[in-house]
Length: 295
Image (cartoon, rainbow, N blue to C red; front, side, top):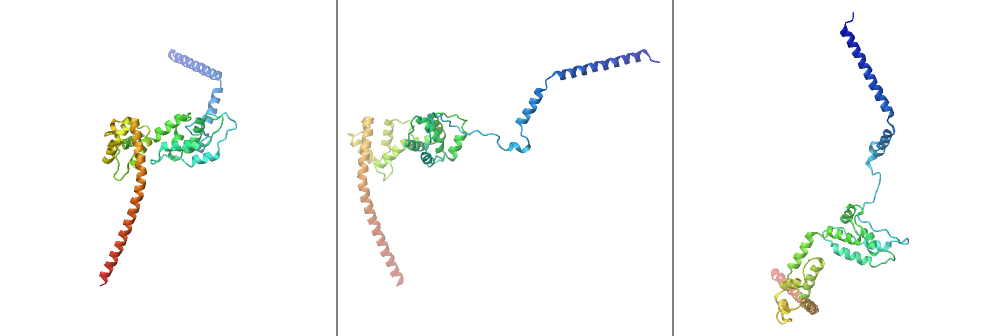
């Protein structure tokens, strides 16, 4: 015999079954209404993004030229780089070594480039196209590691190249050579002047004026040369105009150089004669020593 409480429990159980059944039907109908295409597209994307097997991703699947220098397009359909010019440029590569001078490299590159000329082709654009051929080792790696196609003009290329390989330390070293210049003992004025000018050429951005360069040169010269410069200017070189002073130094150095060529020949001949006499005397002394030892 069923009690009232048992009947109520059966009714609640049946209601729960009906409710769960309705929810399942609604969910099934909702899933059936959703399009299947996105799932298929996701499968295709997974296949494209990932390798087909474990080892398939070990090698590059695509290639883009690694270069930072991007020369402009050439409109001339008959354009062709001459192999001889490229060979000469490749024969004078800059490797990025400490003993190499990036300014010397740019000078030499310009000299080689000026050996040829192509009509209807921009000179700077052609230089930008050839410059990578002049780079090797460290400098070649530097160019490849630049942001892709980031350099599009010849001026930007020179700036980036010098910024990388003409460091602040090199600039400071050259400036110290200029400001600390002194003539060496036994060095002619002509030789000292050429060495001093060489320091300024190695660092064209040194920042010194012509006036300060002349003062630095004067302070670094030997006393007798300073006296000679003062004598040629009525007692004081510093009273002379800068351009006139520069011309005076050039003329005096040229005159000193011509004079020292004759002096050098005389000194060399005298030195050679003295060396010959010393050797003869030494040979005689050795013979006398041998005679005395044999007795």
